[in-house]
Length: 228
Image (cartoon, rainbow, N blue to C red; front, side):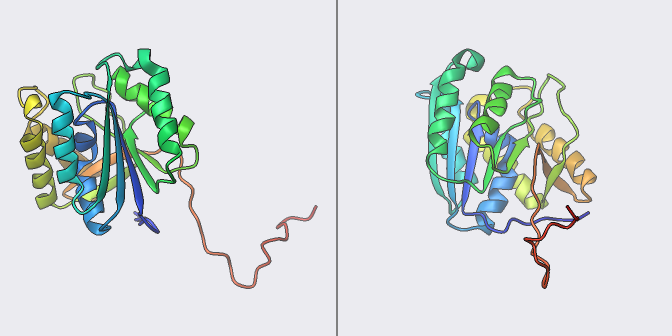
């Protein structure tokens, strides 16, 4: 299996429909990437939870999951479970983010996610960011919508344990949920690890990726390869 490392990682954009989506889907990845790229600029947008306890949780959690990063977090107050009815507001928020610069990597929900809020955001992201690497994270829930991922980031066991500990530390409002426990988070990470020859991993879905290659020496790239 060929591993691809980013040429650079100066700016990351994190997108979530709800407070805790980003950390659940990509918390281990954030810990690894932020530590590997000190000072990376991380911008996060969450569509729901603004002005509530959940916003407080999210701000503290993302600060913990993005060590050493230059972090900017915005939490909107769109209604939970009703994001499709606020499509225009979500679209405007993404378009405003688009004016701020060029992120090297975007982490967002997966388009096949069965939750209407997640799916709506996932469908909007490529309409605003058309030429960017977008990795769709996965969230295990009762809907049974997990699909076979295409991108994996292996996690060492200490990183996975740290992710789980931080989730429980910062999202107290979610601890009574049936899907919010160490077995759920660790179990999915173990399965994804098996699939990429690692102990644990987080996995993502990518719709489009462009590979680059250095020009061949001595080859005139302006000349068509086939006769006209």
